[in-house]
Image 1: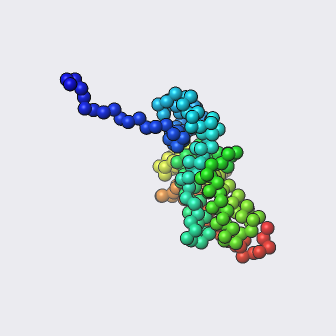
Image 2: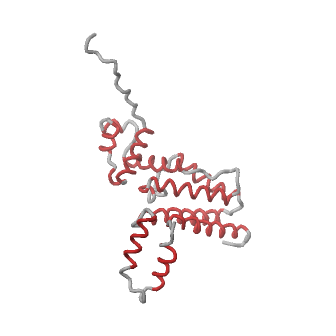
Length: 227
């Protein structure tokens, strides 16, 4: 028939809980968690807001699911290696995931209805530490020390006023020009001898602190009376 076109409309992707959560995560990544509403999520999905309630119970249910998505991106500690290597890999994987989803940093341990990936992750980390010989009490100490460091470092890195080596140098130079050398000699020495050195990246500090914690935990295994 004249006037007909062979072009076909793109098939509509069915709405599902999984799709809604992935889109919610993308919206939060782009605009922060405060920008996420049921209405703009529905608009992004191309559906009416009420249609979402066939797949999610409410906003809290979405937030629980979003946190679970982030946990699913963090590598579980591998069972094929020693505990220290496993915790090292898990820490770096967690830091990478939090850098992708900065809104999640303050939410990872806050949910009252944790999802399967969240529960699986916690169980695997506890199991890795217990299998290594940590007591229940020391497992709690180790988990707390590691996650406080990982989340804390991620939060601090997120709030630094620079992202690249060039920005770091520009900001450090600007600050140094305002500082009387005789009043802040140690700060100036630190900036000149460390921060302003070629190739400096604040993110590299993560490895030192992580190794310090893991080395300390390793020593605790050799001291049965350590509490």
